Length: 427
Ligand code: NAP
Ligand code: HSE
View 1 (spheres, rainbow, N blue to C red):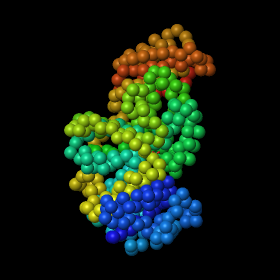
View 2 (cartoon, protein in one colour):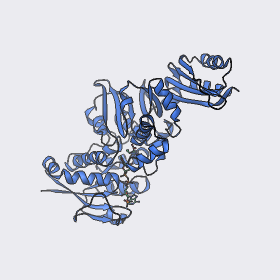
View 3 (tube, rainbow, N blue to C red):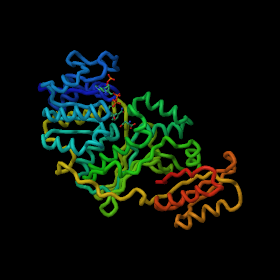
């Protein structure tokens, strides 16, 4: 049987997951492909390290990047290292040497995607990345092929398993933030630098990849509004629950008259909303196409086997010998997105002030909101004092973020406001 030789850069969580599925499903893969996939060599930092999956004698393990790149017998290079510098060298080196490439590296593709896709197109090589967005969920293939004929109206996603598992553990299990983050790191969901996960940057990278696939445009990271979950106070999780909401980190892109508005923010999501039920490391993507209508995909967004499964689907697609389709568009270079400023987003809002409990406070706050045409949907003043003040919570009807930020800045300046407003958007 014909063999397809794979060189695997990185043998950590995802690399070992990939090797395990390839081993367990070897017979099944041969039946579908009519070819045998063989991991010929593996690049790691430390070849002596004990691994959770033991490779066979057909695989050479090395820490020598040059010999890894120069090997002549490789058909597909799989990059599962993470970060930018070394992966960039591996991906460009592999493409220039005539190999197809598979990667799970969303940071690399968000930052260097245009040059890498141009190179792959010039050299007519595959550059596949199913695992880079939402782990095991087949969203790349879905947008690239299954929904290719649709105009996508919006995408709303829970795209980071670490952030979602932290928020779920804080909401459902009463865990504190640090313990919940430690748990996600031990489970192998978190990035080497977990600030990427908790500050919303990893979700923003993934959103950039989805925007390319759905809209055929390159959305610059600098123009995306991004806020993470590291500052989420358990008290707001508790108050949100009392109002019938869960806090979720959402990545959203919408099209308004040909312009794209995209951002990553913690949102209050009504407990009856389908996304409110996505817990733990699970991810979900809700989107709407003008032909297909709404679609929701749900599955494990991180972890060894789910992510390995997505990497394997790319390897099999490239090993099949069909001409590669990297971006789903004819152009090698996609145009820069026509964007709408994040401050022009209209949504509902939640604010919590800590204010002195004295006459006129609510009226003064409501006055500022009224002057900016921000309509109040609910207001509650809690009786439990926080230091010298009491918590006052407002939920608004739809209002523009720019107006809300201006109102909050004015209200934060009142002498009766003891700490600056906590502000969340409501889905
Ligand atoms: P990981 O567990 O930290 O493994 C990284 C691997 O790369 C290790 O085997 C490490 O070698 C090797 N490595 C790191 N730097 C290297 C260098 N300079 N030269 C050679 N080898 C090097 O990472 P991971 O969680 O598998 O993630 C890999 C990629 O998949 C990342 O891009 C990540 O964003 C992406 N991803 C991860 C998940 C997930 O659930 N973990 C999900 C989707 C996408 P040693 O083992 O010798 O240290
Ligand atoms: N660190 C990422 C997450 C891995 O937690 O979702 C999957 O991309």
